[in-house]
Image (tube, rainbow, N blue to C red; front, side, top):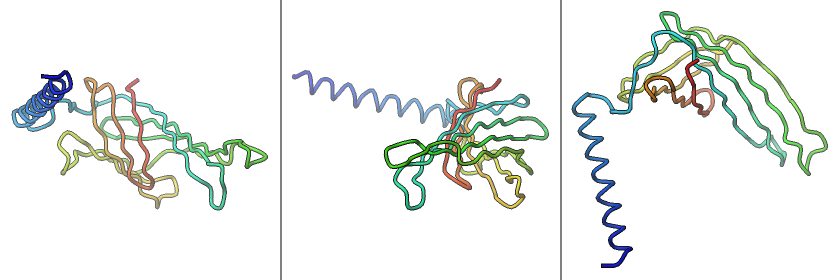
Length: 162
């Protein structure tokens, strides 16, 4: 038997074993083994970055955002967003295009009905009209929360409890 065929069989066996353990953990507890609970109090903070092309331009713009989420009976969230140009060959000047910050309103965090072990955060931007939506997954003994924002834009981040 060659090294490649032994390695291939061990890889398949390892993947099947890992899948079987995950399925047993989910069946036994009703939620994924890695899933934790959201904190009942405290604040987590994260950095989110995203690049995107400007309308009709070549050099990308970048979004750099700091976000804090506070947990408890009245959850809240704050953000500071900076959009800037990358200074490249196509552009004479780079630098900050805009900076915004504010508190989100109507913040609600609820268990996600379709994703076991996930939570959903909904809120409104300071304009009072733009809906914010994100999936939250507590990991690392609930000291870390993975964030997958789906509205108004697709962003993601890792929120560390302070």
